[in-house]
Amino acid sequence: MLAVEHLFLWFLFYSFLGWVYESILVSVQERRFVNRGFLNGPLCPIYGTGAVLASLLLGGLSGHPVLLFLVSALGASVLEYATSWAMERLFHARWWDYTDFRFNLNGRICLLGAVVFGLGGVVIVRVIQPQVEYWTGLMPLPVVHWLSIVCLLLLIIDLTVTVAGIAHFDDSLAAFTDIVQGYAAKAGEHWQWGRDALRGRIHDWAESSQEVLSGLRDVAALMLNEQQRRMIESFPHLKSVNYDRVLETIRELLRRD
Image 1 (cartoon, rainbow, N blue to C red):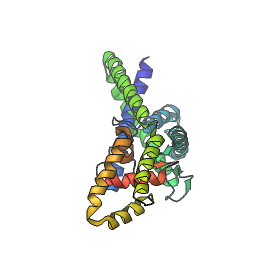
Image 2 (cartoon, rainbow, N blue to C red; image 1 turned 120 degrees about the horizontal axis):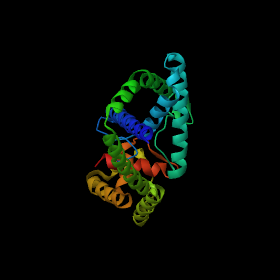
Image 3 (cartoon, one colour; image 1 turned 90 degrees about the vertical axis):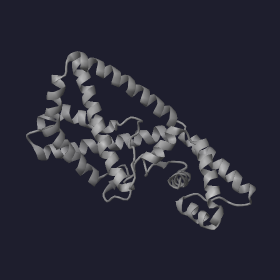
Image 4 (cartoon, rainbow, N blue to C red; image 1 turned 135 degrees about the vertical axis):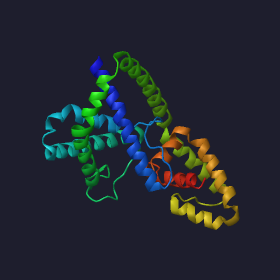
């Protein structure tokens, strides 16, 4: 039982490091703070999963850094591809897209990412994990036990709230689409979706644009729950399988808030 609890604490630690890395990276790219992560809490579980698996399976390669790099890069890429595929099937959305990167595979993984993860695997196995094992080994058993229980309960609650909130993302986008197109039809117009189309509309609206934009944002707030709006904010490249142009319009609206 103690070994399982240690693995869980390692998972939380690396998930937190992954969240810090992702939040800093995306915040710099977006020039604003982005609370990155699928969950509400400061965790990116894919990093925790990958790091723990690397620590358990690749420890024997610590003396062979080149081989460790290659296996880490390959393993992390497989995990990232599988996670992207599974999340798209479950939620009809893609959380990241490497289509604009050279040497990508279906936009789910790319060579640059594999290199970064390969280097990360070397650092984790050879440098970080020995320290993590040392310090968790010093923790009193009651602390390990209760910390694991509390964190597990919080993680379950967070995961439940997140999945429940994002489960009907497509339905929310469809409802937003119907309302906006209904308003446009009453005005004798044909609404076009997409960031550039919205910017063109704003230019045409001139002085009335702020009032119209406010109304559109109110509709988005009504149709999208807090979890769905957070996903759009946290993942600038989030794409919807069925309503991608609608999602692009909503993202532009939220940025103008």
